[in-house]
Amino acid sequence: MNKISMTIAAVLFSATSAVATTFNPIVIESNGNRPGAGGDITSTLDLGVIAPNTDVGIAGRIVTAVDTWSFETLTPWSISFVDLPIDDQQFFDSSDITNPAGNFASNGDTTSAIFSIFEVGNATALFSQEITATDGGVGTENLLNFSGLAGSFILEIDGQPGSPGATYDIGISSVPLPAAAWLLLAGVGGLSVMKRRRKDS
Image (cartoon, rainbow, N blue to C red; front, side, top):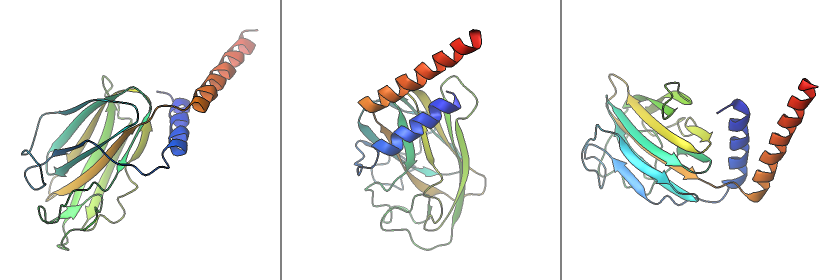
């Protein structure tokens, strides 16, 4: 993916994602501190193909380990921290990354994790950001904002040494390009062809 393509994808998503989002399904990975958790999972959690017009929520707990999620999209997509409708407070008493509704007890924990996104088959990260959450998740909400084009991807959440643990709520949205966007892409492609012809002549 080149920079121009990524920029176009980001612009298109900003124009198409103004509507409030309901995340369904919600997939949970945790060590038991979240409702519906099936135990701490060390293997890759595969979300499969995220269909167009689908908003998938993923939730888990960060410890000194790596949570790995894989997914495929047929259309451009975006990822960000969200507030999933999960009542964490009665299950987990520590810091949070996304500041979900209800908040957590103020115990002063801090947790650091590196969030990285890879295209399958490419060892160079498309996105990598170390995020440190204090109790309440203050300042973390906008640190995981990324848009990409269709393809197969890996999301790694790497809990850093000494971190006591925190929960994360993440949304992945797969949105098809509107008709106007296809026209825009066709126009950009046409300009590229014309530029090459001028160089050749």
